[in-house]
Image 1 (cartoon, helix red, strand yellow):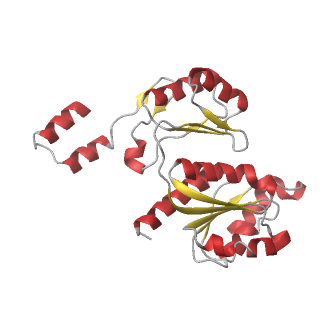
Image 2: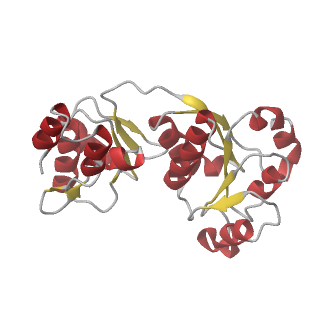
Length: 250
């Protein structure tokens, strides 16, 4: 059953809107041969498909961006190099790039932002991962409060910002080294904390493993942990929490 048939059945009262919506949620993807684009993901999950740019050939990347752009979708691409962005911009002039977070954005429709998410970092070296989280959350419609360089080496910096942090519906805490920041924050607020370990640190940091283990083993309640350097994952789930909070479901 195609979309036209579904709409006709709804129009003629042969199918309810809810029945039609359930069918649309399962519509097939668009097969480009090298990629299968899920144009109905936002209908199922509330978030459109995001392009992971790293490792893709220029040809494939450009075709994927073009396909989404032609449908007037807002498009988010993560882990993109400057070179990849320039290739995309040649064919889509309105494409934007943030070199710090390595995000490509194409915004066709205005984004209304709701609620508040606090994104905190232990140090300035963690900011690229934090910006990936912050910009992902903003792209999907959340207001973001950035509080950077408030790690445990100078705990007074964090304490001076606690009143602001408590106003957020959830917190993304990004830290490398030993990764203590999320546990400290979680012990002082009544909101969920999404911990993001980063690969920032010296040798025994093991490229983020030490901070990951600290966060997983924290004795503070209310912490969830995403993968090392996964700012995108933190930005995504924090937006889900923020939406629920604004809607009064949590």
